[in-house]
Image 1: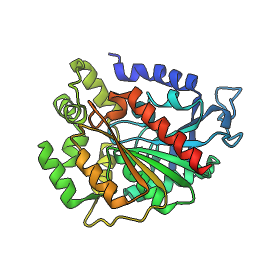
Image 2: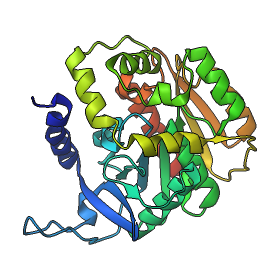
Image 3: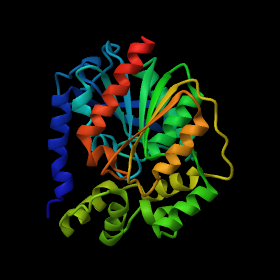
Length: 311
């Protein structure tokens, strides 16, 4: 029987190509590869099917990197944002390690290692400076990348995320949501588990037929062992707030049940004067999928004002 989620992939890929981005794989080092969607004008279009594209040019527009969360790969997470941004920005959409086609034979599973690999891959793609938009798990990777590579990351937009997951924050969040572990929440093994994840991640109740949930589980939750290790690699015993030189915009779903708005308000205070907070009503954790038009407007406003002041 056809997997309905897998069957939609060519359609999504076609929409991404129409929006002006194409797939490209970067070998960071032997054993570590990261798959991306990159601006079409920066890579060659192979004449033969077996030929691989190569880097042809550096992007000419300001660069925006969209970093996905834990439940889905890059273009699924950002499917409603790409087309809204490509006219004015060079958009890069990576798949983090163990998502999409990205893999490593290294044992490191920390967000710091993801950030290091992402920065190295972007350099290989000719990216020198960028604004990073990070959602959930991708936000933690974005914070790490901004701390390690301040010369590359000029600014950040963070949605539904935290600087890092401490033991206490993880335990409190899970207890409030009624899950025994982060794997129970983020790596569902049954339709029931996936429905539970969607019910806490979305503000409005999302209805999908049972079959679609089953197909989504098959397609989106691959590399379970490694993703379980990524979740373990997230938890640290104590967190300190770095002094970020970048401008940071926290763009939140007002009804986020996973990382509540109050948490974003506290983080804004911790991060200091260079940080702004904006919330979107009638939206939960999946804010960019639930209210894409409002999210895109807020995102574009921040990008335009940031570039006006900094370029």
